[in-house]
Length: 485
Image (tube, rainbow, N blue to C red):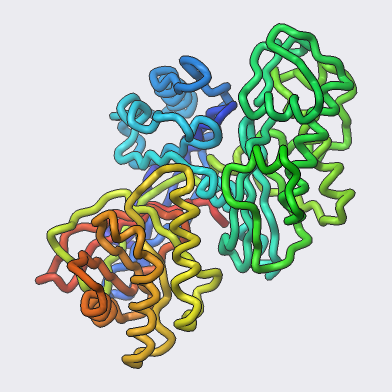
C-alpha cells in the first residue's frame, strides 16, 4: 500500500495514580480505509504493545502534590529501557487518576513532560471518567459487547474504587468510593503505621479503632478494616440503602443502573489478590507493599462471590487504566457540516456518548441522559469542553430533527450558560440541518459546531480544525483509547 495511505507511529500512555505510576509504549498502524474515490478515513488497523514499564510508586512532594520532575525522570528511564528517544515518540496520553486527580497537578505534569512526546493529551480523570477508562482497559466493555451481557467493572486502586456498568460496550452508569489499598501506609512488611488518610480515618472510626501514626496494628485490626472496606464496596454494588460510613466515602452519586447485572470484573492495584487462592495470613504478607492492598483484594473477592455474583477475570488488572493508551487518527467530516468558524480550532475536547446504544433515540428520552452524562463529568469540579456523540434523529423528517434539537438544548442548558460552544458529533448525514434547527430554537445567541459522518467513542478526545474546501469539510483528529477492545 502507498505510504500516503499507511503510517506507523509510536504512542506512549502514562497513568499516574494514587499509589503507582506506569506507562505503556505501543506501535500503531494507521491506514486510509476509504476507497480511492471517497473522502479519506484514517483508522488504526494494527496495534502492538512494545514496552510495559516497571510499576513505580507515584512520586509525591507530599500527600497532596505530585513530583512532576520525578515523573518525567520515570518516563525518560523507561524510554531508555525501550531503546527509544523522545524523537521516536509521535503521540501520547497522560491520565492522572485516583486521589492524585483531586490535586492541581495537570499543568505541572504537562510542563515537565514537554518535549517527551509529539502531542500529549493530559487528562485529570475524575471519578466517573476513570471508571470508564479502567473498564475499557480491563476488558469489561468488550465483554459486555461480545457476550451481550451487562457487567460491572470495579477498579480498586490505592485511593479509590471506581465502578462502571457496561451494556453492549457502553458505560451506562458509574460511581466511586474512597476505598483503596493505600489509604493507610505502613513500613513495608511491618505492623508500624506511617500514614492515615482522611477517608481511612473515617473507616477507623466506623470500626471503633483509635489507631494513629506510629502505632502498631494487629492482624485482627487489619482484617476488620479491610472487611469494612469490602462491605462498603458491596453495598454500592448491591444498590442497597447505604450505611453512614458508605455514604461518607461515596464521591459521586450511587449506582442506579437501568439494567440488572450478575457479572462482576475487578481490576486495579488490588485485583491480583482478588483472583488468587492464597490468603495473606500474617501482617508481613499484608503489608508487603507498605499498604493494605493484598488483604483488601482477598476480602473483596470473597464477598463478591458470597453475594452470588459471577466473578469474571479481566484481561488486564493493575494495568487496566494505562493500557488505554492515547493516539491520534485523522478523519474528515461530511459535506453537511454546520460550524461557527470563529471558535475553531479546538483541542482536546472530551467526547460524551449519553445513550447506551447507537440506535436513534426517541425524542422523549433525549434530554435526561445528556444531563446525567454532563453532570457525571463535572462532579469532580472539572469543567472541560464537551462534544456529544449522537447517531442522529429517528428519521430525517422535520419533526424528528426538531425533537432532537429541543432535547439537546434542554440537556445542555446548564453547560451552555457558561458561554461554551455546543459541539455535536453525528454519525448520520444531517449536521447542517440539525445545526440550523438548534440555532433557530435557541433562546439567545449560541455557537454551534455540528459535524457529521464521524464515529467516536465515549471518553475519546478530539481536535477540530479550521474548515477546508470552502467550509465543506472539517478535519477531526480523534485521540482514542487504543486498547479498549
